[in-house]
Structure formats: structure tokens, C-alpha cells
Image (cartoon, rainbow, N blue to C red; front, side, top):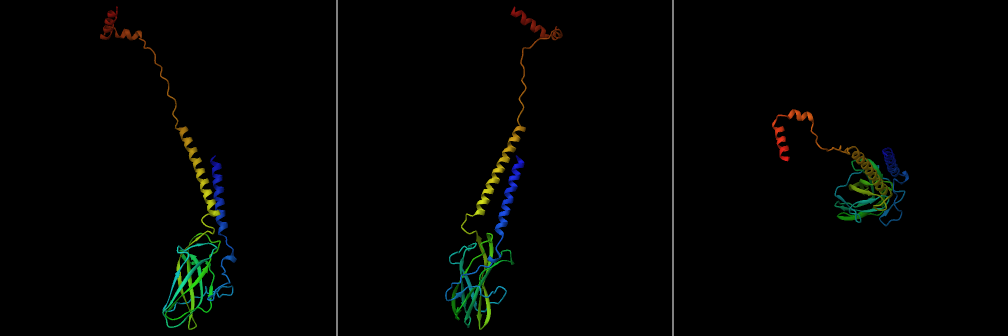
Length: 258
């Protein structure tokens, strides 16, 4: 019985690890999520957008940025589904800001040197922020549908020009929660639930068997019967008691009975 239990347990654990590996494999072509080609007057997203991930610029003086998730204040992002955020810019300088692009990337939370995914780059045409003015720019992104659920760090930057000099500001550097697509119920969650139920069932059978074995070992043996009979008087004992007070009292009792 115990050999069968261990075999079934090993098979279930192997199936769970195989499912985790299969879900962890990603399509290299899907690592960078391309945006839609339709856009408004301010933005164009396409394959010919310049990649600014290898460039690093300093922020300009008098420029402040802020980020808001208008439809997702909890910052929960479903893998493979689009999520929108708004980037607000405030220009306290003396020159116009020409907005070039917005880009973002996903990193491991404990070390930003480990890049998980570069998100799409959204370029803008004819987007400017005059001095002493504010403006808001949308950014739509989607993490890979193969990304494992968990907490990741999202780093978003906006690139702009002042007098033909490039600058950038980090508008968001915080945590997002990546969840599985299709809601809370998924194939993996159902499999893990069934695995937990199976393990609990096997554990219950094992505990039951151990209790039964223990009860058999501690079962008490039947008590020996004690035979009760009439007392007999040995002749040698009567001879030994002759002449004592006990024999005299016995003789007196016999006389009274007569």
C-alpha cells in the first residue's frame, strides 16, 4: 500500500513540475509586444519606431512627470491583455518640450539588472508642452501572455527634446501585479487544486493505516480465569493446631452444635 502511495505522489509532483516548465516557456517573437498602428493625432505606434532602450538621457530642469492608472488603480495587469496609463508632464522651464516617445520595461523586483521584457515604444508627432503648461499623454502596453504571475517592477520613461537636445524623465518606477489571463480560474489553478486534494486524500489514508496498526499492537490480552472452589482442611494442619486456643475454640463450637 505504501509503495503505491509513493508512486502516485511522485507522478503527481512530476506532472506539476512539467506544467510549470511548459508555462514558463515563451515565444521569442512575442517578447516585445507590438502596439496597434491606429493612433490619434499625437501618437503613432509601428514597427519603424526607434528603440530608445539602449539610450540614456538626463532629465531637464523644471520638468516634472506623474503617472496614473485611470482604469486600474490597483496596478493589476493580466498577461497578454492591454493596460492603459496616463503620463502627466509639467513644464516650468522657458522653452517648449517636444515629446518624442514613451517606453517601458519590466524587471525583476529584487534586481533591475535582470530584464524580463521590453514593452512597446509609443512615438508622438506634433506633441509639445509650452512653458508654464501641463499636458497628459496616454500609453498602452501589454506584458507577454507567457509571463508567469507574480510581482514585477515596471519602469516607464518619456523622451522629449528641448532646443534639439534629448532628455528623459522616469515617470513610473514601481511594482505591478501580473495575473493570469481569463480571470482567477485557470487550468494551472484547477490542476494545483486537484493536486492538493489528492495529496490530502493520500495523507488521510496513510494516517488511517498507521492508526489501525497502532491499535492492533496495543490491544490488550484476555485476563486469565480464576477458579474459586471450596476450602479443604488438611489433616496435617489439624495435627499441628492440636492443643492450641484455635483447636479448643473449634471443639467448643462443635459441642454447642450438638
